Length: 373
Image 1: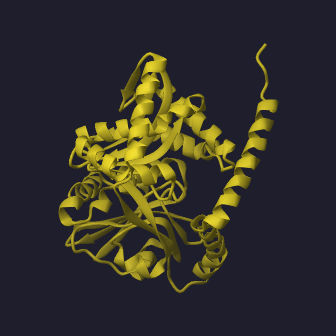
Image 2: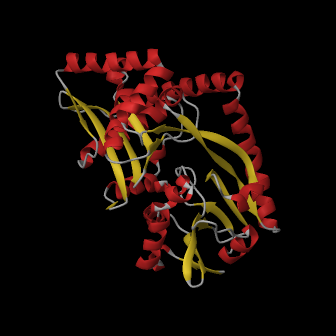
C-alpha cells in the first residue's frame, strides 16, 4: 500500500476519474453512503480554492488508486475534514473490501489528529475515535415519487393533507405556482442567501453567509457542473416571485440538502415544505435514489423522512502532544453542545434565548440600515 498526498491542483485527471468511478459504483457494492456529493472530488477541490491547507491523500494498491481522503491541515499537524462545519458527509472513499490503518494514514498525511463531525458509516478503522453518532434523515425516492407520496400519506396523513392543501391555496391566492428544479439565474441564488442570512440572524444563529469563504464556495459550486456532480438550485415561484428556494449538491444518486430558506411573508403557506415535495418529485424523475436532509432533528425533517442514516463525530489521533492538546480544547465544547441539543429541557430554553437575541439583533440591524432618499 502506497500513500501519496497532493495539493488540489496536483491531482491528475486520471485520479479524479478513479475517485468519481468509486462513488458511481458505491451503491452496487453495498456502500451507498460513499456516493454523497460532499465526498466528491469536486467538493474537495472547490474548498481548496477558498481554504488553506486542503490536501488529498491517494492510497494505491498495485499502482492503482484504491482510496481517497480529502482533508485540511494546519502547520502544527491538526487535521480537519474538508469543509468542516459546512460538509455533511466525510470519510475515506474506497474500493470494495479495502481497509486501512488509521495511524499509518495519519502519519503519511503529516497529521497528529483528524477531526470529523459527519463521518459516514462503514469507516471501521476510524470507529475507535467516534465520540457520538447521530441520525441524518433521508427521503427515499428510488421507487418513484408516487411511491414516496403514498408512504408519506400513510406515515403522516395529517401533515400530508395540510401541506398539499396549503400548496393549492398558495396557487389560488397568488395566481399560479411554478417550480424550477435546476434554476440557473444567479439572482435567485442571491435571494436565497439573503433569506438564509436573515433567518440565521432572526433565530440567533451564526450567519454562515457573513463568512466570505462560504459565500464564495457556494457561488463557485453553483457554477460547477459535470456528468455526475452539480450545484443544484431549486426555486418555487408564486406569480413569478420566488417564495422558497434551496441550494444543495447533487451526485449521480444523491441530492444533499444544504441551504433551504423561504420568504417569511409567505410563511402561512409553508412554502419550504411545498418546495421539498417538489424537489422530491423532480429528483425521482432524474434518477436520484434519496435526498439527504442532513444531520439534526427538526420537525419538518421528521415529517418528510422515510428513514435515518447515521453520521458520527470525533477525532482520529496519534500519540502526539498536538493531538492531546487539540482534543482537550475541543471535547468539552462538543460535549456541552450535544448535551443541550439532545435534551429538550435544555434545548428549548436555549433556543428561545437565541431567538430573543436574534430579534434584538435584527431590530438593531433594521435601525442601522440606511434609508433610501
